[in-house]
Figure 1: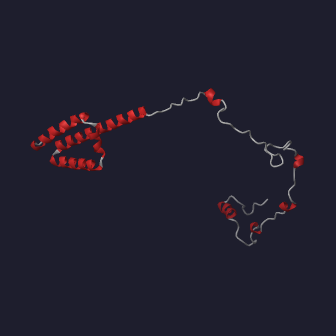
Figure 2: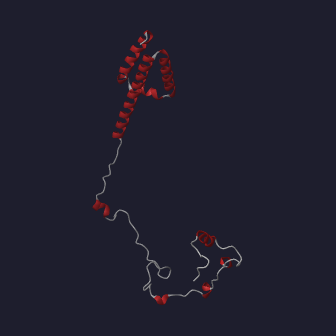
Figure 3: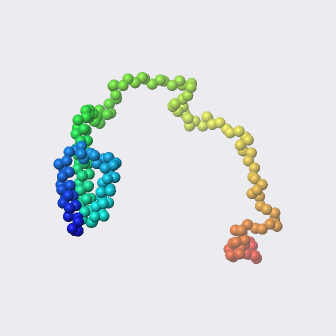
Length: 175
């Protein structure tokens, strides 16, 4: 520790111990932007003075913010306890399965049978209900693009490949 840091050591040690005795309103001043900027400049100044002063300065500021946060949590807990909260108990399984009696529900309308049917007809698998398709559906023709090319044209790649490898047609061995 440098000799010039001794004063900072004493002052900052006191500042580390004191925050728990400070009033809450004084600690809440730490929330203001100007105070936060001043704290940053104070830390930079202490870093410039020496390592011990910087460490104790950081610890002092940390203890101030720690105490401020502790007080804020305590105030929030007190406010939460003071609020009028009506605790709604959860329903048991038996109560949850019972129909509601508090909300009036109109009975459902009956659908008109001529309008639309919501249930299957009787004997839906009866083969007498078969409706043949129109005869035009069976007028299919083979496309001209699939016919083989002219007789003098090149054979397909698979035919010539097997013959070149010796697996296909071998001349002189026709049955």
